Length: 155
Length: 83
Image (cartoon, rainbow over all chains, first blue to last red; front, top):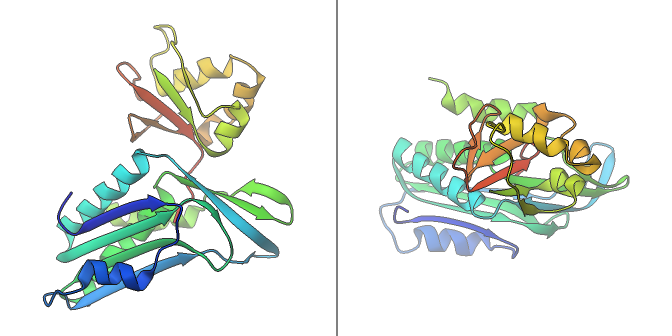
């Protein structure tokens, strides 16, 4: 993996500030860090959510995220990327996923963060099960996430 | 070859992985879904709507017509909902 690309899948929570320091701390060539945090909501439409349980495909998930991070590194002028995706049981208000992109200027960092999140939502091998009022049920995939991911492959 | 199942596919099949040896006429991912579906009610339930089932061979996403010869690990799962 390219230097300064970090990919982790873990049960533990993460500290956004600590992750930014690890990515960009002590460097004077980075002018922009974009940080996206995905957080568990307590409500989906009319239904309240007690918790989400995330499952992943160990090995494939890490490798695929790393491959997409490398793709982003070659597509935009980036100084570094960190992706942390949690698995296991996650309660409302808790972090689910973190994407950090660092660059000299903001445009590349914003674009790469969006590219990585669109990939993670639609095509990374993770599955959410929702504990709600109707009992546990798997979250259905959404067409708009597929559309968002597909736009990066258009010319 | 090893077959892995995730999310509701895993729940319906009732196991997360197993080793299978399909006959030679089972050539593609689609063929394998058909062959597994005939192994019992749990499999038939898991694969009752093949178009929603996603597959990966050796950690790479593949289409239903992908050839399974030489695969070490084939995974079946529903559409992804990460992020």
